[in-house]
Every structure is written in structure tokens, then in C-alpha cells.
Image 1 (cartoon, rainbow, N blue to C red):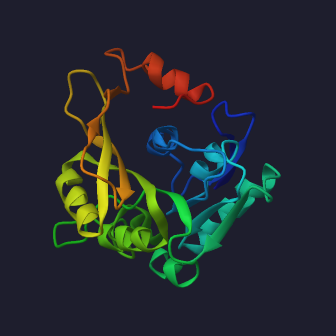
Image 2 (cartoon, helix red, strand yellow):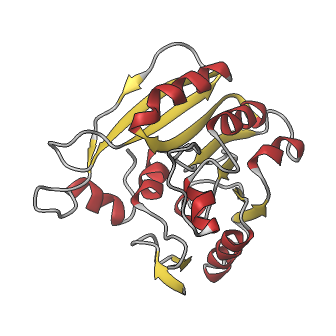
Amino acid sequence: MEVVNDLLNYNKLKIVQNTDWFKFSLDSVLLANFVHTRPNDKIMDFCTGNAPIPLFLQHKVKNKILGVEYQKEIYELAIKSVCINNLEDKIEIINDDVKNISNIYETDSFDIITCNPPYFKVNDNAKINDNDIKSVARHEIKLNLNDIFSCAKKILKNGGSIYMVHRTERLLEILNIMQKNNIMPKRICFIYPFEDADSNMVLIEGRKNGNLGMKITKPIIVHEKSGEYTKLINDIFDGGLEI
């Protein structure tokens, strides 16, 4: 079922979602707030879904943000999300495969890439959802990590950054693939569901042809023991707080 929700407390923005497929998650909120922008940055969001990250970031930069979504049904939700907020002059959504983007845009043309990708590998043990839209969004059926970083390597400017949110269990694999594509890991932030739990998510910043040297930032704790969101998470929900 298609619904229109508030985009948290971000300047009274709205987002169009479909409850039968998926709704934007905390992952996208944290990723958007992990990104360090400058006013003239050119930004592309891979796997944009229904466009939460471009909506979160559009007020920070002067240039139009480009979002890439492979699935036509989700792309149409993103278009509606942009239009309902009258942001056609700030956000453009492209219905295409990330693997094709380097054939459309010039080499070394973007300052920032953001990506909340499919998290799970496809193998004999993978539990693939019967819903094709959900399965493509969650599993590396159409797009994998090497696809993402090889494309980022081509279209990022020298010194440009890619920001990703992913599962902590795949961190070593992510770092290895980044470096194979001349993207140097520069900043990592571990996310914990509770203070006494293991990290389940991680935010990563990589820089094209960057120098050696990586920073591990202060961790993010999502929930108090009571199950309520921590003050940090509520501050982010209340309009954005750069991580």
C-alpha cells in the first residue's frame, strides 16, 4: 500500500513509501548525517530507493543531487517523493543500473557518492524473499560491492569521497574491495543497537586516491536499555546532526 509519511522533522518534508515493499530505515538517516558536504559539491546517491538520502542532503548543496535507482517501481516512488516536496530543481532521479552510470557521466565528475546498498550475498544459504522488489533491494542480485566501488572509482573526482552504510560483518571485505579500486578508507563509525551489544552496522568514508591514515570515530548507540532511542538518535531525528 502506498503511503505518504513525514521525513522525520526535516523542514516538514514528505516521503512516498510502499508498505508492501520497504520503508526507509535508520540506516539512511545515519548515512546522510555521516556525509561531510561543501556548498558546491556534486553528489550522486547509488541505490537511492525512494530518495531519502537526496531529500536529507538537498539543502546542504547548491548543485542538483542525482539519485540512481534500478527498480522501476521504487524509482517511481522516488519521483513522487521529489515532486510532493517541489524539489525538482534540487533532485534528479535516474532509473538505471549503477553499473551503467560510468557510461553516462564523465570520468572524475562527482565530489561525493553515497550508497545504502543491498547487504546480503547471494549463495546457497541465502534466504531470498519471494517478493522480487524486496529481494533485489536486500541481496546482491543485480549489484555487488565491486560493482559499486569500480563505478565510484571512475566517476569520483580525484580526492572525492564515497560514503556507505553496511553490515559490520562485511567490513573487511568492503575495505579490501575499496583499496583494490584505489579508494582509501578514511573514516569508520561503528553502530551498536545497544551499549552492551556487538556492532551490527558500520558507516564508512573512502577517498579516491587518498593518503594512508584512517580515523575510527565515536560510536553510535541506537537504543537505551529501555528500548527508547538515545539522545543522539533523537537529535538526528529532530533535524540533522552531523556525525
